[in-house]
Image 1: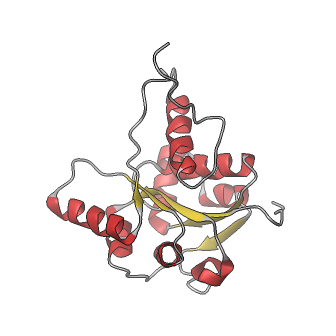
Image 2: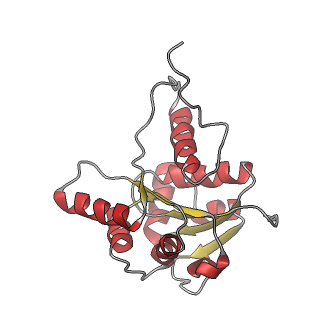
Image 3: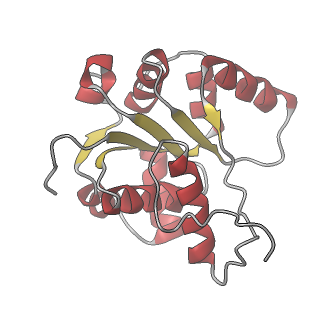
Length: 193
């Protein structure tokens, strides 16, 4: 896939939590919005992607402008000088949340997230776990105190989605909006008519 210069660079990390479709949809919507996509898929996410979407990692990697192995700790997105506009981890597993909250940059998703925070850019964590215990809540608090935007994929129902696909697109559009990227799938509340 070709890239354009001068467009916002957005990193998308997909981890092994359920909800891999949110990361896939994020890449699709970001590409349609004209952003330059940088994708990292964890090995556990590959298993989840195949099970939940029927797609394999190679197919999804081709949809992004740039794709990296999670072990590529020296990739361009691992440095603040690369200049990303923001990052989303969708879905964000509790393991990845814990590593981000504690600055344990032992893989590329966590390193890129750490760099995003230290550079003062928006980091959206689409945490996918329920119910939450006190340990999860403590990690969410730590990540939020470091500057992360905690965004559980709770669907908005005011737009009366007719399909699961509409619900996924609306939720994805909402968290991409937190990165400064607007998409047609993000229908804003207009008040009761």
